[in-house]
Length: 162
Image (cartoon, rainbow, N blue to C red; front, top):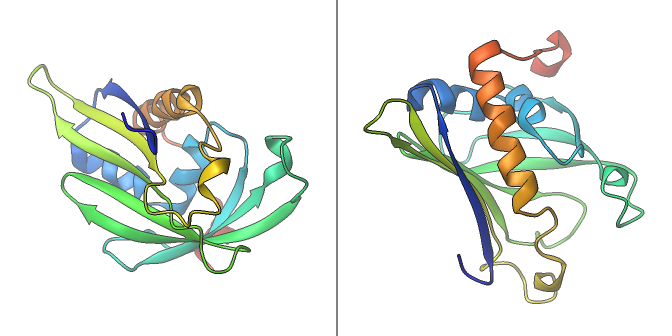
């Protein structure tokens, strides 16, 4: 791990395509969020670089900045057999420049070794001191939530496909 990237890894008992389908679904992002900030999402599942959807955020869940509720646009920067990655455009202009992602590696023992990460190496210098916004504990928790979502499913409100 570098000073500008955090990550956590977990073996998830599912194939990469099944996991990728959760990571490609806006409601999947809400279901696996361990920070409590993602309150909902609007948009269709993504399938390629440049696709996007909107996430309805509540920064009060972290209790660090008085931002209240706001929306961000998740823009996919990588979407392939080996993983999904995105950046966020929101209230900060120009965008901060960090990425979140999941690397997917088929495991010899079955399932998929999933690595969740946040990388702020390309973030604007004035924003780097705020990172990491959520720590490795939240990344590990999101992996547990991902496994649960893959194995048991998760809610998909009808209003999110507008």
